[in-house]
Image (cartoon, rainbow, N blue to C red; front, side):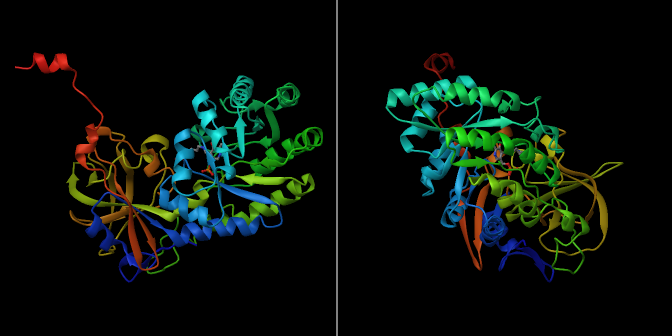
Length: 436
Ligand code: LLP
């Protein structure tokens, strides 16, 4: 269920016409639907009800404080990968005791900060990291709750850049080595072996790799759990979403394409995994990012120019790869639709931004409705790995973000003022002296 739909010719987010937001707050503009966020969280939560579980939202997907607060109010925990992300959770009113800290490069300062805040667990990615956490905990006179991240060497059948669970990847500790690592870790005085974690990749659209990984790892968890009295098993994130929802003309049901129907739903996911997880008798953590926020957000942009070369029709918009890098980075598909449907005439178009790079595009040779300068377009499914991956490349300020709930809309991040672009930069004295 997604709350972006046409009412007549106008695209709405919940009860708000998106064009009114674009006019009021300017573009590029990220717009999030609180109801969609809530429904995605609740859907997953319901599917996992037979288990003692905690949904730790992967805040790398969308760290906006209002998004985090929405999820925190629903009872979510958080999957974090840096001190910055933990500070974001705290700023949003979240509970560090519901945070799991992943990542291969945790610094001593980050470990100390997380220990002082009392996080739920460190998901440890190497033996040197275990030793470092033990040493820092010793210095702080604390016990550090840890889980080893196992790399099960299972192919997630997803994009190479977002596969994490094979031996080609930097993540986790090889399946065959994990028991030895726990045996050695159990001798370190300042560690509490609280569980085990895995995460095999992102944007998985079928259950098979999840099943394969859980089947492989569950017996290991059972063995280790009886030895070290585990409390939890984290199966990571990765639930995929539909990036190509059908936009049947005149229909309000965008998301009813055959492809959308085949997608891995939380119900299917739970149906397949529950029988493997329940016998463990452990608390199950899951770390979804994209599933919760991906289709709860869009990026709104304004058409600046239409440029026809001999061979192509370029629609030049005011958003760029610095606002949404996924097409440039992963060749990913984002559906592009007008905020006001005026014409049924389709023209093969490249939608591109103003940045001086050929990879600054949102689509190539795609049949899109004819648009004119001043029209607005929405890039769908931009709520995960959208704003969070934005940069100031080409000295472009970061976009504003708006949250909608019913008929209400609020700016949840101001557009970055241009003068802030060089905030913190300094010209050294000697250069000042050298100026004429
Ligand atoms: N847990 C861990 C340890 C992770 O590394 C990730 C994502 C997640 C959970 C959440 O995965 P999700 O449920 O969102 O699939 N920038 C890429 C995606 C990178 C994913 C990184 N790790 C993209 O735009 O597709």
